[in-house]
Length: 205
Image 1 (cartoon, rainbow, N blue to C red):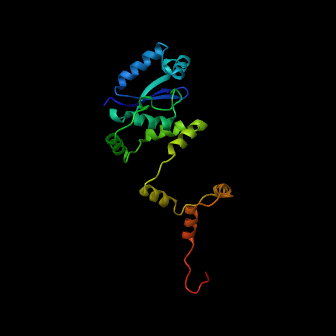
Image 2: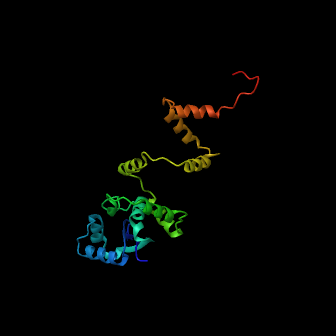
Image 3: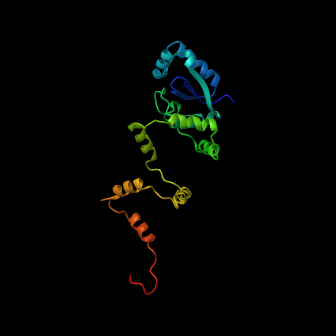
């Protein structure tokens, strides 16, 4: 297989460019041709190439994927690694594109049970160390979650994962402060009532 998601890594400062291609070998040749000619579409990558020199850069394959999955997983890796040399934080070929239900199902099936290799996990961890999300990136994440509803199965898993979990004192203080003065919703009142133990006979209600 010669299609997949790739990165162009600056070995001096660990900054990168992320993309995807049906033909990885051809894509590398095209990138190197544009960079050597000082006409690359990413001015960030071009400026870094001019500053550090060709020997400072490596072209590496992050993951091999079938062509129909490339854009989805390119975007996934861009979200994870937040590459510094990409002009836009969105996989370009996906602008205005909608996957068919069949393609969505295939992508879902391909991702089920997916586990990253030790090398890949190390790469993700290294890329995130010391990095703070910008206000714009936080807004994008928030916008992506608006209107999203979890399935009953997902909610059950989330609930099970919280059982027996205790928050540290600092977290409990923050949670308490956030709730002060906040009106109770009907759902919150119902949940509170459900926590109360039932009255036994002879007890005063």
